[in-house]
Image 1 (spheres, one colour):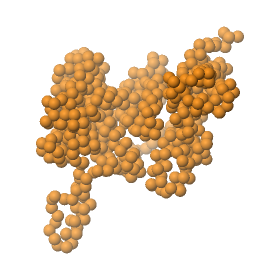
Image 2 (cartoon, one colour; image 1 turned 135 degrees about the vertical axis):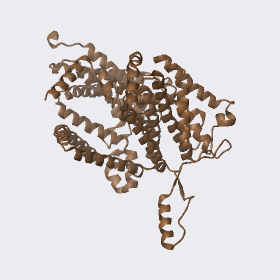
Image 3 (cartoon, rainbow, N blue to C red; image 1 turned 30 degrees about the vertical axis):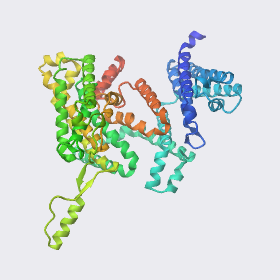
Image 4 (tube, helix red, strand yellow; image 1 turned 45 degrees about the vertical axis):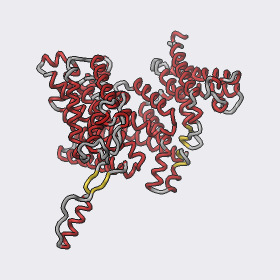
Length: 590
């Protein structure tokens, strides 16, 4: 009977122990206790419940997929056993905490945690309830895979959207108070959680919308594909105009705090677009990318500061070109000695270059010029001409018969994050356009040839020296521009702001988003820079949650969230490649 069912109990045993250890770790470090009172859906779901039971649900689903597709009973058994084993480490923790005082070396294993794990019952009764709950969740997770795909996806999307809005409900409720009214906010949120009826309606709306889109996306795309070319261009222009309008309205909708978070994300988008050229397009692993960021920031600081270290008292706009040129020159200086290096050796040398720049910024040698450990202070904010005032004065003087206004005109200091947002948006738009055009150009194809194989690229006539130097120079220029924005945003800079972890974060965000993908850079920046800022209410555990998210993402989507077409093909297995080729040939034949 066992052979006919094709059961391998090692599979649920392995997955169950992994899920149990994850739940145990979450409990021991205290994140379950901290987040148990944080409701996502009022009086229904809390953050602690999601964190505690998610391992059983997710990993049981993974275990159930290991069974053959036609063995549904085996899949259910795998899910049940995985959920059952998830509770075992927690039950051992309950027993040990009941018999011994574990708080001497595990301070977070408190009576409050044990009460949560036992659902307020006795240790024996609570352990049995916990065992039953995790087993049931594992069974339901396995049974969920039996549903058709057109039902699975809407349900998952509705659940994800509802829980995500529940996590950020405090921020959203505050914005609704400011934008609409307090009563409207209270009608949707109850404290820091979604109201139950609103959560149910939101789940149903998203699920139905996703279901309809999955059913009708092909006819819709076919209808748009059959439109006349002129009408297609008009629709594309309208979509672009709508996106631009939404982008310009974001500060008004987001408010001060979210605008500041968006500005930080935008600065990393700029750096990510630059490193994407070096790593994603040209395949040159640069771990010293923060050096160009520091060079751009210090250039802006020295050129514009009103303190004793200022050299020219330039305006922000006059200093920007110099920051870009100096950073690009530094990229060429770095590129010359590493032209013949590849892989790990290139990474080590560029890492050393980044540390050299940071140590020089800290040293007494350059202290008279860039301030040393004291940094550079009194960096002014950007200013723009008040065009509304200029136009107003022009017409007033014209009607009164007075001389027309002349420079200097009235200016506005971009002090608030909502105002500085437009500077960052313009820089990101410029970098995106340049990256897009370079990626589609002959130079972009040369970079990609160098990334695939330098020897073959050189054999077909590509000049490696100029190609690599251009990649380093363009990438460094983008990083210098982001550094200039960073210095002007903070109005003061210090050497400790330019550590190695910035280079690592930028490299991670292009890997997470998808190497060589421009939309992937934006998505990676939002996940790696924006999410930790928005999860500050979870204190020190926010970085742990962030790390768990990265691990899960790399296991689920190793090619990145929005990979480039080349990277997507590289990650396909041989069978998937043959299937994709067959589909392509079939479409061409049709």
